[in-house]
Amino acid sequence: MLPRLVGQGIMLSRQAGGIGSRGPGESQLELDRRSIRHQIHDIERQLKVVEKNRSTVRERRLQSGIFKIGLIGYTNAGKSTIMNAMTDKCQYEADELFATLDATTKQIALSDTFQVTLTDTVGFIQDLPTELISAFKSTLEESMNVDLLLHVIDSSDPNHAEQEQVVLDILKDLDMLDIPRLAVYNKMDKTDDEFTPSQFPHVMISAKDKNAKAHIQMMVLAKLKTMFVPFEVKIPLAQSYRLHDLAKIALIDKREYVDDVEIVSGSIAKSNKWKLEEFLGEIL
Ligand SMILES: Nc1nc2c(ncn2[C@@H]2O[C@H](COP(=O)(O)OP(=O)(O)OP(=O)(O)O)[C@@H](O)[C@H]2O)c(=O)[nH]1
Ligand SMILES: [Mg+2]
Image (cartoon, rainbow, N blue to C red; front, side, top):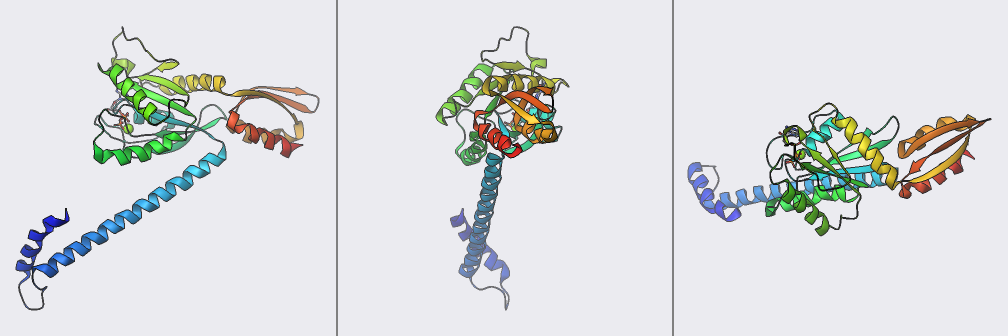
């Protein structure tokens, strides 16, 4: 881009002309170049700040023990629409390629108490244009740290099978195939009746349907039950109120009262077992 300024510099200098105005073409050119270098430097600095903020937020989230879910899928599959349905918020969605170029994370309640973060990401595509690779990688980095991937598929697209495969291939390239996954077959409202899903487990929905949120919540909770490890704790009744914090990161199945003790059973992510021990340590 910079070399093209040569012509422009001369032109601008000719325009100036009079006494006290800028000198010959070269100095104008230098001015232009310096100003652009400043702008480039400025943008680079801003990008560094964004990156730094991102990694601090990411670190804080890693420490909190909150379960993390990432929405991934081919571009236009309906990830942002699902994000909106789950969070009751407005995230840019559009019928165009790469409507989302930046990762967005929101914390939501999956049941009365259980909290998760949900991250929307940029859509996958075959033969990604080089200009988009860095945006793609940096938003994907957000989903690298997640505990569960929701693979959103536009079931109504005649090429949905190829698109599913592209996503799975990219996951393999990124070493993300071992992250637990739930397939979300979306746009069922315009999918023909013969459609048969190929991935398991899955949920079939229309993101625009009012029941979409409840369906996804139910399937995610069922999936979590298979991933979590069971536990049983006894809490003195006087300390029962502290269960509130534990219930944000653990699924509570049953609460029983025996004398002045509450017996709580449920399940928790393996990575959070130490949190349970910390909790028990604090109440004893
Ligand atoms: N008919 C129908 N349209 C849907 C459904 N879900 C999403 N859409 C539409 O599909 C288009 C793409 O949705 P987005 O949510 O922006 O898709 P995305 O996966 O976030 O796309 P990128 O950000 O580009 O990767 C939008 O026009 C949505 O309104 C659905 O269940 N049924
Ligand atoms: Mg999007």
